[in-house]
Amino acid sequence: MRVALFITCFNDTLFPRTGQAVVRLLERLGRSFDFTVEFPLGQTCCGQMHFNTGYRRECLPLVRRFAEVFEPYDAVVAPSASCVGMVRDFHGEVSGALRERASGVADRTYELTEFLVDVLGVTDVGAYFPHRVTYHPTCHSLRVLRLGDRPLRLLRAVRGLELVDLPDAEECCGFGGTFALKNAEVSVAMAGDKVANVHRTGAGVLCAADNSCLAHIGGVLSRLNSGVRTVHLAEILASTEEEPA
Image (cartoon, rainbow, N blue to C red):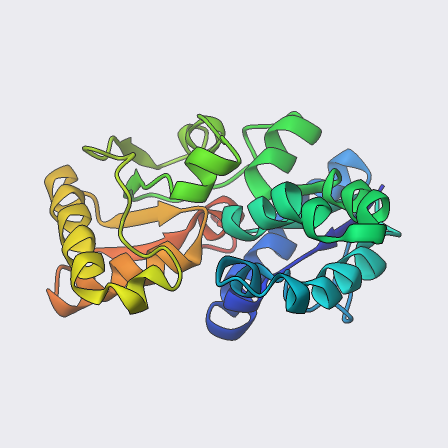
């Protein structure tokens, strides 16, 4: 099986360690499950920013590019529930004559925890992360992809990790892409509520399936000098005793 990594614009630009973690994790598992991991250099944006702000026509070349680049692969994996939600829910809708082709690739595109749990059938990935951790289910992971307890099942199997429930976990953090720019005061207030709940857990690490939301929450945590750090779920799962995160 050939697996392609779709890293997404946000991760490529701001959080390259997340992509590196996904590669380490998948290459480790690939030796047991007989698949290879590739990074197609022709990949670009999935078009979510354009689509969400009403530029559907401008989104079409990006949808076409995505289908062309990832069509040769058996599976496409991304460390972003947000972008995978865009690909799976909307690429077919905006692709016009490309609908069948785009939908075929979209059907083989998975958020990381979906690929691990549903495709590989694994929850114990051999990770080690000796920290107290709480998990924030981002809106796209919760309401679009409906990841359910997949991330939690993976976290519970990590050796050394103490997982604590986040109060009001399903409440939005306030990021919402351009929402955070257009409604900054409301967005920051929502992030403040989320941070208050993170503090209640006593966790030293907050993790999620989307770095966009982690960046938003992490900004408030940093300004408060809280000592809580944000870590993408992929980086926890890639961490081992020999190569800790």
